[in-house]
Image (cartoon, rainbow, N blue to C red; front, side, top):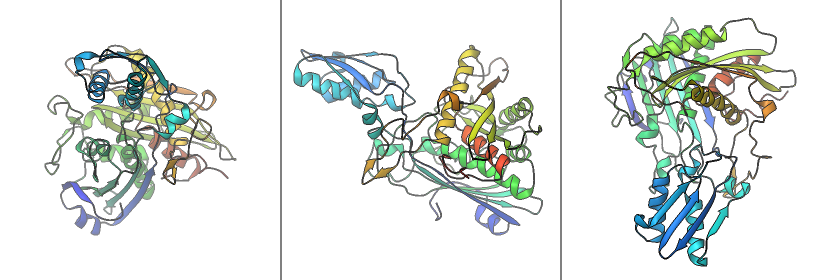
Length: 439
């Protein structure tokens, strides 16, 4: 990320604008491989008999599982039946059905029904991990503190490596998650994707590449605010700019819009502004806080929804971090059942805190070092945010519905680290946070 990479978006002349800037703010951000760590590890029961397969398993893609079983067992898909059971947590891991194929092969070998259940150790050692990521952003400011240039280099092994060999660059789906679709009002923007080879299995993970991109972009917004002595919320709104439809840059070869038509789901800066303004108001942005407390804000568009989060943190004199309150505003277009939206946003706050505070998969001699919840911990009840408030933006008739399950995760980590900076003056650029606050 410190050297030029494949250019995937190029508006104006960011190189010249950076050279001519009055000040350049640089931030480098890191997010490690993370595991899904679903409460229920992979499990499947499969019965092979007379050239037919019947499977019972917690899979997120029953159709894909059926096709993979047919291919693996060399039979017609008409001879495969898949009964999906309750997931026990999926988050993208159980869109891959390797554990079902294992049970099927054993059933054929034994000519009997076979139940395979992975241990927690199996699960953490042989996951399809969320990719590791390194992000570098350089923002050029003029004499008034306005951002006139933005260069973002994002290096991460691609999920495409799971499906094709020698994949060195991220695929359009990944590039469209917070990189080439940056909705900021900046004339000179350059996005690059340097090579990064995969060295383990990369898989779908809740929110996918939006997690490291939002972490980097929204952390940089706060760093620009610090460099110019301004309020982070005000800088964020200035960067978003006026309410308008933001077209995809003509320099982007294959723009990704989550599989949705751009005319129905355009990038709408006005909707992003409104969730920022709403959550800032509801969270009491700028209110007086006790010593050791801080507020952080972040916003992001993903899965064609708009979301903004304010996190309040408390850091005691021993460096112990707690989260007294989280406020999130979401614009997901037309909605029907608000309870489902509340559940998803509350769950995203717990998961977002787990990933940012604790989540890291590391390797030694080619082997995953973590084995269970003792060395790959998740946030427990007593560590979870004390209060999580969700504000659903009213919609106008005809506004199409958009994602709810995934958009809550990406803005959490940057809002959290921005709040930590407000509370302690310590800027965290590398996840997980874990021991970085220790005195």
